[in-house]
Image 1: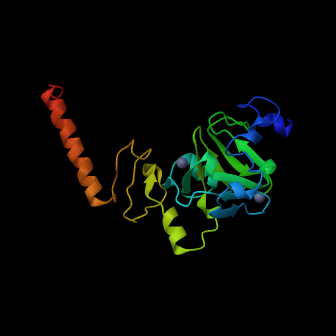
Image 2: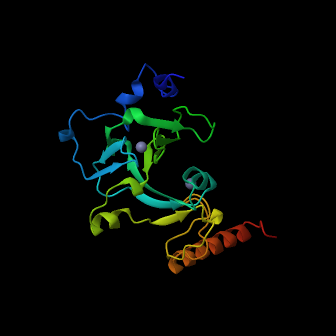
Image 3: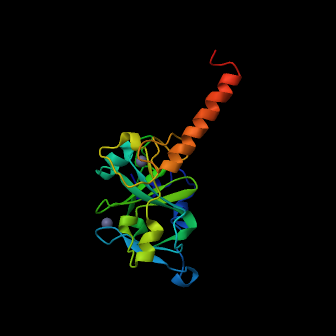
Length: 207
Ligand SMILES: [Zn+2]
Ligand SMILES: [Zn+2]
C-alpha cells in the first residue's frame, strides 16, 4: 500500500495528516519554544517539545502495553498535540491501530519509527502519550517533571512495585485503588465505599 494512502485513513486529501498536529511541521524552530529534544533509537525520527511539564505521567500495566513494548509495563507522559514538533523523520513513522489490528491511521493508534521500530507515542483523539525514555532529560528538575504519578491496570501486573504511588486496578480515576496505594488514598476510597454502601442500604437495596 502506498505510504501516504495508508496514513490517510482517518484524514482526507493526499497528505492532510502532515498539516495537522501532532504531525504539523513548524516552518522554523523560532515559533516553537523548545524545552526538550527526543529521538528514536536509530535517530531517523527526532522531535522537540515546547511544554516543560507533562499534563500527566503514568505507568501502565495493561496487556496491550506489555505486548507492544515487550516490557512488564509502559511509562507514558501526556502532552497536547500542539506541544510536539517533528524536526526529523515524520515520513519515517508507522502507525498501528490496536483495535482493528491494522496499520492504518485510525485514532487512537500507536506510532513507531518504521526503521528501528522504537515506540514513539500513542496518538489519542485529543492528546498524545509520549514515551519519556526517548526524551533527553538533562537535569534533576526535568526528571522530577516526568516522574510517574500513578500506576494503571495494576491488576494486570507481572511484578509488584512498592513505590507508594496510587495504584488503579484499571484506568486511572475510573477504577478501584488497590493495595500499596498511599494510605490516605486507600482510606478515602474506603470512606467512599462505606458511604455508597450506606446509601444503598437506605434505598433498601441491601434488604
Ligand atoms: Zn528509528
Ligand atoms: Zn496500557
